[in-house]
Amino acid sequence: MAAIRPAPTDRPAEPPPGPARTDASAAGCDADAFGSRTGPQRPGRRRAGALLAAALAAPVLPARAQPATTVRSARATLEVTEFARGLQHPWSLTFLPDGRKLVTERPGRLRLVEPDGRLSAPVAGVPPVLARGQGGLLGLVLSPGFATDRTLFLSYAEPTPAGGRTAVARAEFDGAGLRELRTIFRQQPDASGGNHWGGRMVFDRDGLLFVTLGDRFSLRDKAQDLGTHLGKIVRIRPDGTVPPDNPFVGRAGALPEIWSYGHRNVQGAALHPSTGRLWTHEHGPQGGDELNVARAGRNYGWPMVTFGREYGTGFRIGEGTERAGMESPLLQWTPSIAPSGMAFYDADRIPGWKGQLLVGALAHRSLYRIELDGERVTGQERMLESLGRRIRDVSVGPDGLVYLLTDEPEGAILKLAPR
Image 1 (tube, rainbow, N blue to C red):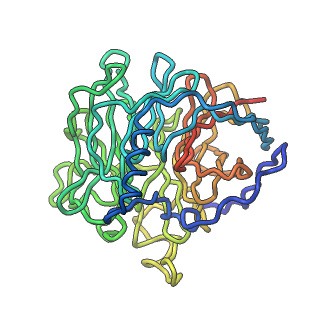
Image 2 (cartoon, one colour):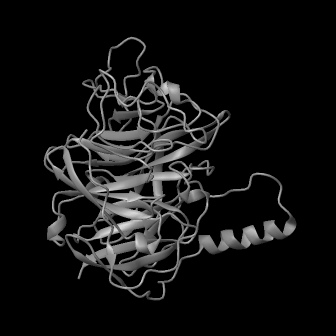
């Protein structure tokens, strides 16, 4: 893995706001959970909670226009605007053929976003979710044939008697609600705890679905165990069945859905627009976030090899940073940036970004632009840190503009356009 110079920062054209709030959510790669109370609450709190629930269930009017921020990066001058706001920890965004958008909120809601930024009331028919720690309603993708079959796919933390597991459901979207919801995949085994669910989904060019699955934090050694889905990427058909050319089909003791293994918590996934290969990034522990190309049957090393260290003690994890038979990352970030969301920019509206990779960052509250030469990283630029927003998802719209989700109690959709 080639060494990369430290990322330069963007240069805000306006004075930056005050310093970002310092809290546990920015302290480390895994500290991206929203708070939740599971114990008894006083009546006042219950009353406040009921009022909040009612407010969240109502349609949201367009936000009052916020002043645009102009940011000059090395390859473009951008205008950043709030396209929509009032979302509670939004997680995944997709674009409908009619010009509207769909967005998941981690507490368990799916909302429509109108072209003017208005948010709908929650869409009916979403499966029950375990909204604990980093869990909840997570990924969202449309079927490759959505224009005719109206099918979408949701990943989520499914509650179980033992705790929970990552699951994938498919449903038909009728324009206002979900119908014919059916769960097509469940991670095995389930586990207690609220962290490391994975949940990103990508369709490949053959119409097969990749799903990223975390190691659930306390079961990290299972990432090397092909008899579980923990710490894996799986590839399934849209009905949940297994493609016969998956790399571990027919191997004794291995689950046939597995595509690659030795992952910790993959939070970004995208197909390369030229090669069609699956690119991913994942959270390290204390350092060691990784960018990888996820190839069939390959072992990505966790927890046997990593650039990260144990929380608190800083002790080494595993055997070092590399080992024969295990893949080394294309790029690693130490200290951790907590990457989340990822998209290749293959549009024309921002010419200086063509063919480059965009990665959101939670802990670093930034957007990273990754320069590539084939599968070699040649440079990176850190942008938007002056905004102080935790970037959860990164998408390129049909209009060629970049849309970001901010992971906040009062989250927003940001739109990046050339100036």
